[in-house]
Image (cartoon, rainbow, N blue to C red; front, side):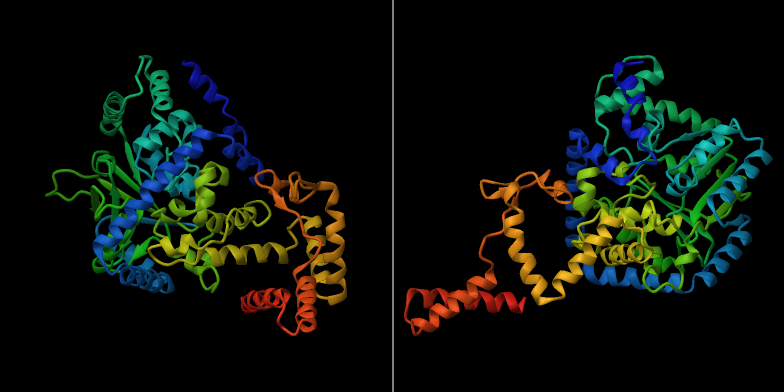
Length: 510
């Protein structure tokens, strides 16, 4: 094994699973390559989306239509789940509803054991990551191989995805070459062609030998019971046609009513995700192989996962999170994700959508709720979202929920109560602002606080904090007003007061 892979085997990122957000973030920020790689790739994806938006024209109308489709579907989800299930059954498939990941894993294992499966070839599926399916299959001796190239690289590295659509966004060619060298026993250069050729040859055998092919589901079409798969690699079609059994795992919200709706969603998904007009491969699977078909599985099983999704139905604040089509556009514009990547979120779902979705699905505000603070609340995620999910508003509501549940640190609660008292009383406010000038003096160097105490330490680790001037704006305003009166409005001070008054009016208006 190469030294790079040995080092990777002890990668501290892997040891921090389950630790706090702050510690995971510090580790990510210390990884210079990760920050550069994530920034470069997200910029490329973001610019591709902007070009694709301009190309299609009337982008806001497309967004509005996509939002309407998702809202209608989720508002009538029970109806469309029933219609979808009936049509899958009519086409010869089987549908199973599972309340949580544990139940979904058990259902998959039951299908695998019934078919005496030893090898599962997997297409890209975030829901299978949510279920931790690979780990459970390994425990009972069933080998599961990721066939998406990025996922395959991460499987060799024993890592989880760092991005919804580009899982290995944080890896460079040298790291991938080291992983392939360790896997094959032959030396690989950090060049795209030989690396891709090795992966293609290795994965081809898995497609041919697999007992079960597993995929996710981009959209389930209720009117026909069809499964829609989109990818830029051919593995999705291989996995869904070559093995004798095809198992689909999908979140219960991933439905649309009709093929007309599918046309809208495919246009939005491809442009928002990668800036393409359409993804390279778009496959529609309706039931298992028919007698007249040349290829296809003998069995089709669809596992529909709830895992906390139904808890958002009827919630005016959070129901719209179920509108998400997993395009990752919000990740690509998020200033926080840009700097820390996906692993710092400690969840299958990263970025703004992950910061909202994770605590809701896990129903865990104590640990996962901390993700709501991993945001600048700039609203860039909403502007990029093709179905107009107000993620920034949801993050504020999650923060409010944490406060209501008294899950914020005691020191923070005391600080805000003090703040409320001081700023709610004019006398206290004046005392606080005047005393602040003197209290800051021990920390001021050259007009700035360069190493702040307590809560200010985090701020001053990355920037200097300007010192508070001795004279506040209110005091200065009062002095200028008096000077103006004394000079009859004709002194230089009067002119200054006039300008200050203009600035003050702007400030008050704001």
